[in-house]
Amino acid sequence: MRLLGVEPYLNEQGLNLNALLIFAAVMGFGGAFISLAISKWTAKMSVGARVISDPRTEAELWLVQTVMRQARAAGIGMPEVAIYDSPEVNAFATGMNKNAALVAVSTGLLASMTREEAEAVLGHEVSHVANGDMVTLALIQGVVNTFVMFLSRVIGHTVDRVVFKNEQGHGPAFFVTMIVAEVILGILASIIVMWFSRQREFRADAGGAALAGRGSMIAALRALQRQHPAPLPDKMAAFGIAGGGGGGFNLRRLFMTHPPLEERIAALEAASRRSSGSASSPSSWPCWPWICSSWAARPPTRYPPARPSAGPSPG
Image (cartoon, rainbow, N blue to C red):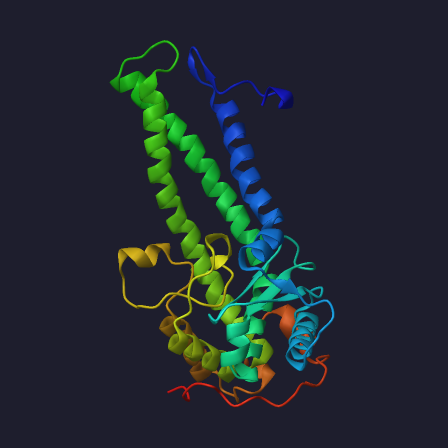
């Protein structure tokens, strides 16, 4: 930190709070944004995703054309479209720039969902990108990281001075207390981040419903209920389509990146009941300017007819 003209936050007299805050902010936001900056590369390596640069099959062509149409409707640049080999039904979006993002789907999703359901999943992921959810959560993570690092060192200093009466420098009590406080505060901070992540899922579901139809979005979520998809790697979980199950309140729920699927379905059904017009009419959907303003310019859908569902009809 001396290179930045900032003195060390620890000295013989105690803590330099200004220096500590700068240190915590640099480390907290730096870690969050470095992780975001390499998120596309990390995601591709984690699941072995293959970017579709030249569609080889009809399914790949449909996938690219669907994402292109939805990205145009959402007012964002065309994302990279990728497929990764997995029997699990899942998809995710990531990237630091909404105009240069990545949308990836599993082969299991393409094999087990109908075209309408898959289109809704893609709409959900494109909505994540258009809403800037990756940057938003990185900012939130940076803020909580900063406070965790700042408060843990203040707590360590206080215990060292008040409880152990160490008046010169900092003894082992400072470092032990700091580590324990950082762990506890980090757990509490993750609850805040996960809460924000769950709220973004409801918004992405609404965006997917606006782009592909509310009925298709509900059908896709019900298909996920039947499939019980395995979780994505931690760094990508917040922007996948699949969520955990189990309603009600329990401790595990506080750390879920996604609301339970039944709650997401219920939210879409409630929105449908509130709509006075037909669910197939864009004018009756709750949407944001980037969707509503571009809907009139939406090109006609041109893709092969939907394949019959592999699973039972949603109840």
